[in-house]
Image 1 (cartoon, rainbow, N blue to C red):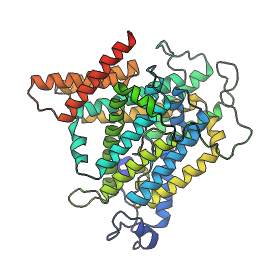
Image 2 (cartoon, helix red, strand yellow):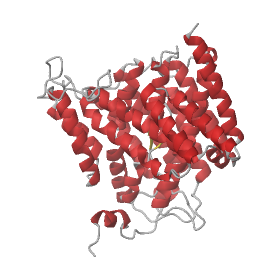
Image 3 (cartoon, rainbow, N blue to C red):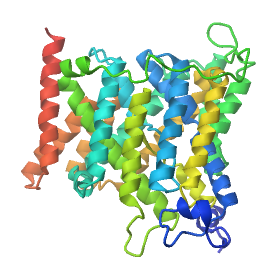
Length: 462
């Protein structure tokens, strides 16, 4: 039987490395027994990881621009948050995992501000700050595992997939493939046709495991946009006068917390703060376990090295990100590409942080990227977030109904809290009917969601 080249690529290991000493030993997750690596491998791993996740500098500002925030400032905020988060993981967690503003929670952040409930950007930053503080405190205790497992798998899958669909919807709308009325875009317009072609071809690059596939698709559409007219008759891409420039300090967003508004919007703020906390918990747990397992860093019993410090670094990253004006900062699963290149220590995310620092000086060029260029990246991120659906046991009706309700209402209403409420209530009622034991965390969430829906309904009719 002929071997599958993709399977070979996924399973082959780098050649043996000499004994680890000096800086690499200091940044190793297990200093007493450091994994084999070299400085060259760590540098290659950092370049590979940045190539796989660098799209966040373009895509995150595109999503957050729904809040009305300045896109130039958002580019700098994204790069700075990724830089600080990755540095914390490298120095404290000492794992080959890079951090950046999380895809999914950034969409929730944007929905909260743009949802017409009077929530300001500063209010949402307080929600992220509270979630980060809670995550950091819980990371120091054994309660972490209990909270992660308190939510049924169906709700976790529904949240992940619902956000994936919503992110893909943002991409389709930005590229003109989905009109505000919910209709398919007009392919007679060159800009829409370009976005459609990119959506179809980008998955081919990903399937063929082309390095930095999403970044390449963004770059290609941006370059083609120099010769493709938009709806206003001007070319899609407008190159700035200076490609490299000192980054502007985002003073309007750094430490921009609005505690007064948070207090006056508790019915919405508390459930969302809880979501940011739980979302960071779920994503950090899944990513750190998945990447360290692939790197061969787990011990024989399946325990992750330096786990408590790694979770602490993730939580501190979210706190630092909120102070910089960013949504939740979380571990990126794209770090697995760096692991495939040989990354085994905290030096990998430290070098990734330096690359994000350099990206802050390219903000004029990044700002010139048109929405059509980010469409395929957003769609592919959404598709990859749908991966969680394979973990759903669809033979049980309570799982299917709750997950589908979350996905359906999130993508149609643009309101994650409404989707979560419907899915959580449906699961609770069916679990009670089947006499399935419910966790106190889920019951508390049900109460907060019910309060949110009641106060939202009263606010709309007052």
